[in-house]
Image (tube, rainbow, N blue to C red; front, side):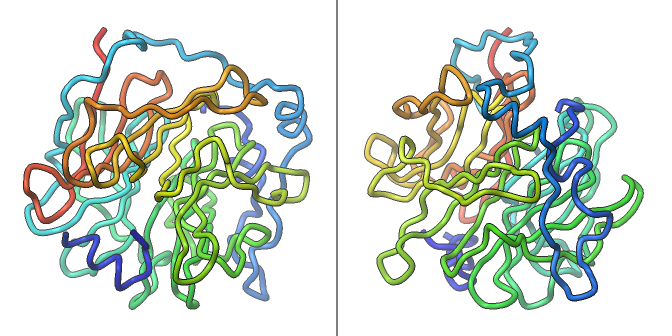
Length: 331
């Protein structure tokens, strides 16, 4: 399923306070320079060293749940779900108090929104339309916010083909400014669904390959370097002839949830998981997360730092629009 604007319409209907090597402190203070180019992200040498030494730089999760157990039944995020609009692509900050998502709220059209809540048990506030980031008439989607809440990634077709963009604000009380293309990563292919790991070392995203009528989304990874990202490469261990998208890595980079139409699911995009022993090890053969999937679309979104909760969107139970859910592992 593609995410060009026309097919997106069909889709809608049918940490960790680590010093991030990229956006947490490394991006320039303003997203766009005078010539409208974001420039190269400023990745630190420490992050590159972590990647090369096979250490994620983040400790194993301190968890209050049984990580070996299945997730419990998905719960609707009722404070955000509506009967008439799609709510899509939930991505959160490590404290789980700020979420970015894509939806529509009158009087604004479908686009990128941000919302907050006072505690993990509290309802979310009404989503706030990100005026400076959205472009009327464009398909702006796949939002992702970094751990400190200051840098924002997303995809847009505002200049034609879908490509990745980013924006950085100076403080949590500021609006995100106008975005700029993520140079060094975008190509002539379609790039969507960016996810920067909590330590800023890896940028995962989906790229449609080969470009053209037979293109299929596959997960790619670009490693942070001192002056930006290295050349993105396909994550072959997660590939299949069918579509694979929405990479959702754990904070320590050892677990990867994603969505796929591969054989073994329930027919539409289903949520799968893969793991690896270290950040330099290959990913394991993906396995389907049976307890989260439905006959409809199920799309991974964000994994809590302790790996106990997975946020996702789904079009299940005969619904014609997608809603947001969270599932939690038992204690």
